[in-house]
Length: 260
Image (tube, rainbow, N blue to C red; front, side):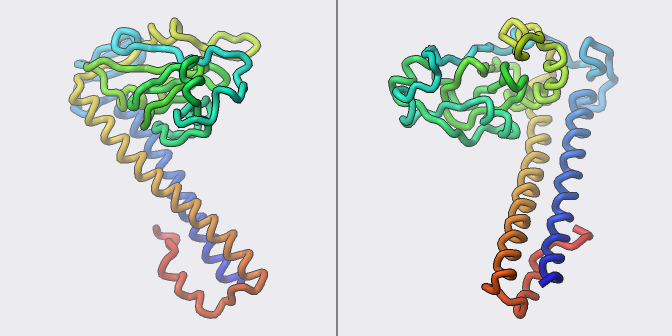
């Protein structure tokens, strides 16, 4: 039993290393692409650091509309407005989405929508209270409260490129956020935020490169969680005698080795 469990635990550790390596690769790639671009151009010094010579630095409010979410009723938890078919995302949904908002935990009914606002699929959502500057792109139409803002880029700015760039700004936005009882930022804080502005074709290529890395990281993370679940299940089954070790050698060909 110990040998079987050790085999699965080794596979979990291998997968943990793969996930950690991909996270490091993604961070390094983002830093390199937002500094050097894709074309091997000479660099110039700007207020956001070195960027390719052909890139501009613009204000976020010049290339995107920024609109606050809405939920007008107080108290917020009045059950009359919830339980319908309209997604109503929260700060936590954005914080854990890894750039793509695919799930939600709360819904509004028609009365709830009447005191809120629906934002379309493709909107960049950014948190401005509690958590500062977590971001994600809506993959469905959704309403949200005023602790979130919706950012809609114009035709010169690719939304995926912009969302990735805003991810890199989280620490700086946190540093500069007004400090009161609770940190928060607002639209006036975001409008002048300096933002790199390459030609749209280069933006899209950078976005595609980063999305491919994110897809690899997501797949590796899913595999890690699957292996962790397998370990827990197998531990229970072996310890309760529901499964015997005989015949489990088939696992050998299904688990990653240390060389993976």
